Image 1 (spheres, helix red, strand yellow):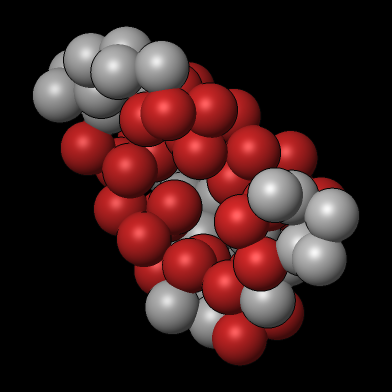
Image 2 (cartoon, one colour):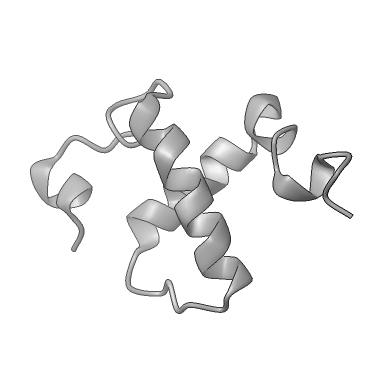
Length: 71
């Protein structure tokens, strides 16, 4: 169990149901973990938060592969 789930603070996002700085910091960590094939099966709360973040336009638009200098 991760700290967010254990503390009972996680909602749709890291701290409740609105995006906070914690989510902004979490997304690149999960993104890179996936990029380098790190196993994330033990972190369903974090991967769920990541998926909900990535469903938002603000997060999708800032993915590394959407940046003009990424290629």
